[in-house]
Amino acid sequence: MDLRGLDLAYVLHSYERTYINFERGENGRLFDDKGRDYIDFTSGIGVVSVGHGNRRLAQAICDQAHKIIHISNLFLIEPQARLAQRLVELSGFDMRLFFANSGAEANEGAIKIARKYGEIDGEVKRYKIITLEHSFHGRTITALKATGQEAMHTYFGPYPDGFVYAKSIEAIPELIDQRTVGVMIELIQGEGGVEPLDPGGVRELAQELRRQDVLLIVDEVQTGVYRTGHFLASNYYDIEPDIITLAKGLGGGVPIGAIMTRLKEIFKPGDHGSTFGGNYLSTRAALEVVAILHEYHSSGLLQQRIQLFEERLHELQRRHSHLFIQSVGIGFMRGLRVESDQIQKEILQRALDERLLLLKAGRNTIRLLPPLTITPEEIEEGFARFERAIEGL
Ligand SMILES: *Cc1c(COP(=O)(O)O)cnc(C)c1O
Image (tube, rainbow, N blue to C red):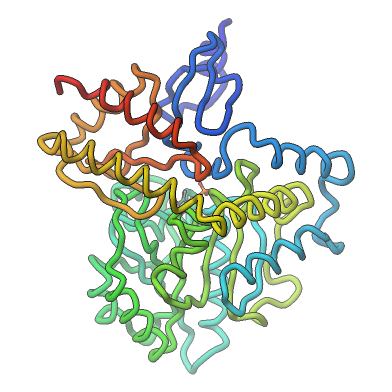
């Protein structure tokens, strides 16, 4: 059986899969089994932040694998402690961390922290969490229920109670009642359609929540670790959340999630745990990713690359404004709005034919999440292919 046949026969069909067999990558380029090159404006959905085949990351993983991969959280884990310290330093927040393996799992942990806070603080038990419509918080049962897209709640019930959806951040305060313990938001909605929230509105909301002792949980699974050009989107929005979750870009492709919280004493031994979370391999990898990106950010290079990408994107949008209604997003988290899901689909297919990888988001957004280390040459080549792909559309 060929590989496609194997996949179809033995793997559950939960994805609309494109059958390209990638064999290796070099930063913003991928190569398939026929030696053809692809420009990657997806970075594995915002994961491969330091590019494909990154030598420094590969070396760190390799060195660590030769020593210890995993020993469990019953023992001290040196790279875990160092990574926690580093993430706290870079965030500028006075927090502690818990390490998980994915975004959904980090969000589950964040919800547990909020629920525990709601048990121990105040007279009545508080458990409700307000999230936004069009949000995305993950695929586990609870994270799925936290996700404010009713279309995703068709099966799999009964779901846990206690999630309330707000149409906008302005609508959140009026939904708060005596049972509300938290608000969970993405500062830039990712899967929902690359939708940045208004910074002024977010700061006002943060103040209001602090006044009412309602926790602000910011899901930075997609926006975190320099995706926006800043270490956290929370830094860019100039807010200090109570809980922040990270995942996608943190490990450069090695699965890792993290919960950061200023509620440093919330968990007692036994309250939460993970067999794999925070092991030697994933935390050593994340330490290297963070080191690479910190240098890259400090040198001003990240900002230069973002600027070039932004210029090319705006030029493309202006030249084809009949196709791209609007250019949206911040840093290396970008989108182009189109009229319909048919156009969205058509553009993705044509780009693929030109060997340019793009993502969709929501029903009418083309999403671009390049590796943060993408080179000027890769950017130019990617946009040249993009231009060819939409010729005549
Ligand atoms: C991708 C994503 C998740 C889910 O992360 P997984 O690692 O797939 O569980 C959660 N929240 C946001 C904002 C995301 O973009």
